View 1 (cartoon, one colour):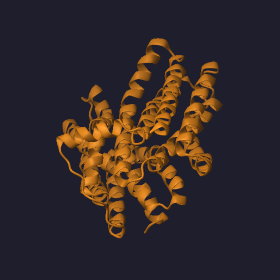
View 2: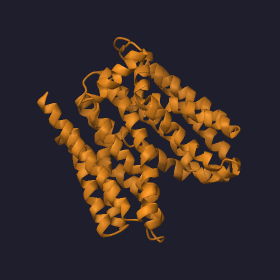
View 3: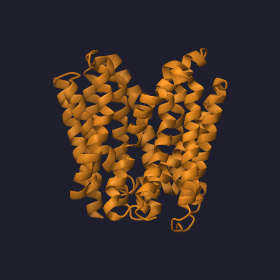
View 4: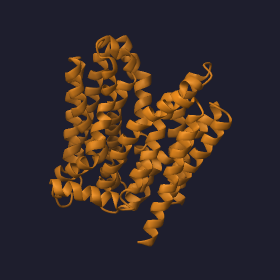
Length: 384
């Protein structure tokens, strides 16, 4: 099964299911008040609960996935996700729904750690850049699918139908992948797991210029991506607002899968990420000089697309073993959830205090931080 595109596409499909665990709540957030009228501000935790689990347990999840074995962990996570979605379809009381979201966070983490590690192992050297760039689109594609199909399903059939459809999706991929993953080569030794090993693994990851580099870049990317898409719409011309906001994720995916893949054939993934950060920072200057310009927004989305795909492609380029790749993917899950959790609240507070100008300044500084940090870590690697 080495080099099997059907299997790699199925693993990407499993990743879409994991991203839908975020997206299915986000796209119906305004509808949840009718289900939980007493929820108030607590409804926000339905969105952020998964992110909190990721911040706390991203690296721990990577260790557990390696110990349980990637194939087994992925299948268990898919079945767990299906069961949780079935429970959510019953629309239980809010405290129970919040508890289900926390459990769903564990399912989400296991998938986003195990699936890209398996893809990197299955892909040939020629396929790896394209395969991991494709994996990097899973969040954007999932949000687009949920916006186009999930939200209308919830509106016209009911919120339970959306959760039930997601449960069926997760179960279908578990059934498809189960016999096919058994044909993969045996994985290496089972790593130890204890409190001391958890502390030691965190120290190993974040002291390594190779293991931590994708994650640190991913922190600043996720800080900007979701927050910009969340706070930008009110500043856009209402006549093109929907068109621009729908086109931005698509532009990001399109650039990632075309220019991004072409660049990965010519240069190391980290250099593509640096180019993406540089282009994104320049776009923030453009958006400062021409506030909420539609073309600048689309070019920004394209520049962020370079960061998106190449960040995942950099994991196997910088880390040769399955164990260090898993650690890098766990760190990306941890830093990505931290970026998602911090980005929108910080951007919203800045906008409330200083208005539109804070958007290009705050995002521009974040993009520059990602660029400088990648250059710094590359220098450390050259000196080792």
